[in-house]
Image (cartoon, rainbow over all chains, first blue to last red; front, side):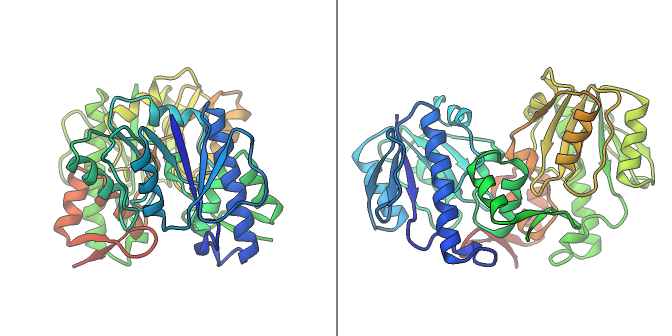
Length: 206
Length: 206
């Protein structure tokens, strides 16, 4: 199965600006990408990083890169038009595990989709050659509708790990709580720790 | 298997104050409770609602109530001391389904735990008679530690539906996106709809 990992190489993770400066955001995004690449490889696949700009540091030998500076939707759709089936996993899912790929791939549905918190699409596996993405807005709902329009069956994957994309400062708490890889290490090294006040646990930085 | 659904009957869901007035919060909390009770019954169990005050409207015949006005941790621990094994499911999980109970119950672990977003504990099943809860702070991590301290094995359930407790306005978007029961209906009737701006989808009220 072909696997793609879209990656925004230029000024990534702007919503983490309240807690990380631009260089830190770039470094943390790169660590999360490495984590996702390693996880996809551990599942027996050979991922292609679909990046908006060349990646300077080396990736594992089993991974390759394609540079495409188009917006995310156009870049992914160009790839979907070229070949099928395809697994697409976002680069900001440091909690996801090789076993989770099984839930995305081992199904009879034409489209298997793992929604993110807030209605996004964090990962999907399509076997429907006509399926195309539209990442704007509540893309999970849009993708279900697009699949229905092209007669494709849809299965939704119920995974907290796949739902947890790391976009906002509160999301960093999920990495500290549940992570066990390089993204968690990076945050700890950068001085982040859990802040257990009232309500949901957040993060603070020392 | 004994099943408990803790319910805060007095001034529930205060963190929804920005979008719901006190009577609405009470009504919405009651609708979510009904949804959870029905789901547990659909899984073949006969839940006990562990409520801080008597519930006026009737519950299904398969459900019973125990009134205990102690704080959550003390009330649950008194129940755990009385009997084992026990399944405990929070009352603010309108997305969870009867099939999800299988993941909590059908395991060899002494403690199966479904973390909520932000480090809480949304559901657990304990077969360890010595296990006790402590809901303050990052209770998921604390519960793993308490289980280890009493020699109990722990399994973490990876479920977005079980992770999505409804506490804050942004959580309402999850109900509108993924819900298909009375909690979603209540929100739609109250004028809520998805607000697809930048970043994660939120809600607005008409």
